[in-house]
Length: 127
Image 1 (cartoon, helix red, strand yellow):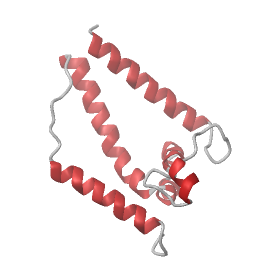
Image 2 (cartoon, rainbow, N blue to C red):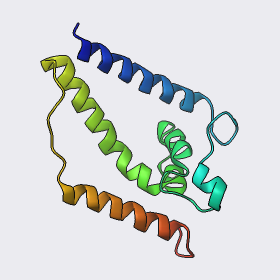
Image 3 (cartoon, rainbow, N blue to C red):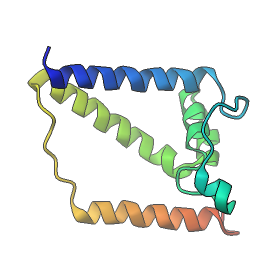
Image 4 (cartoon, rainbow, N blue to C red):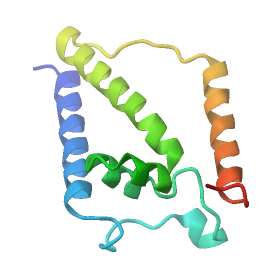
């Protein structure tokens, strides 16, 4: 096993262990999860606020609850999971990380969506 394969395996195992913790310990009931420093300072919700609770709902197949806690995370989580699976496959199969250049327009679009999402969820337009 090469170094890249070893690191990828450890990273995948750590991600699965983290999801197992979130699956077994509801963020709404346990206080060992970290608090958002942006929310603590401003009492405004950042784009990531509610992501842990949304992940808990997704792991328990509660799509409406996940959308309620953080719609942006809920919509982007399947894409992130597919990307991680693709990277793990490429490293384990071909022993190299995929070289995919993300276009600047995509990065700007995601950043713009995060800003719009943050503004929307902190105003009276929030659902």
